[in-house]
Length: 128
Image (cartoon, rainbow, N blue to C red):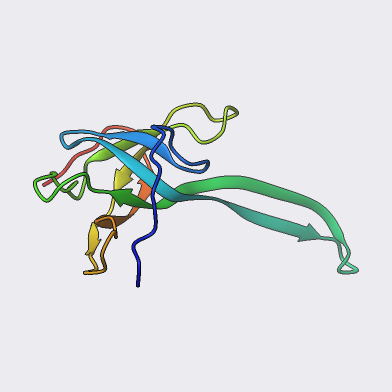
C-alpha cells in the first residue's frame, strides 16, 4: 500500500480550532460538540390542556477530541479549564474538564488524541 501525499498549508480545517487549557497549554480541538440543555415545566388547566410553559437553561456540556503535538505534550488534568469560542452569541466560554480519557492507535500517520468532556464553568473552581 502506498503512502498518500499530504499537503499541509498551515490552515486548520473547518470545525477545528485552537483552544487554551489552563496550566497545560494550547491545543487543537476537533469534533467539538456543545450541548445546551433546558429544564421545563408545563402547567395544565383543569381540563388537562397546557396553559403555560416555564423553561430554564441548564448546564452546558462539551465533548471534543484534542490533538497532542508530540509524545512530550502535557495531558490536561481533571479540574483544569478550557477556553473556546464556538458561537458569537455566547462569546468565549470556559469549560471545566471532567476526567480525561486517552486513546491512541498504532496506525501510520494517526495523530495522538485525547477525548475530553467538561461542563461550563459557573463560578469559582475549588478542587480538593
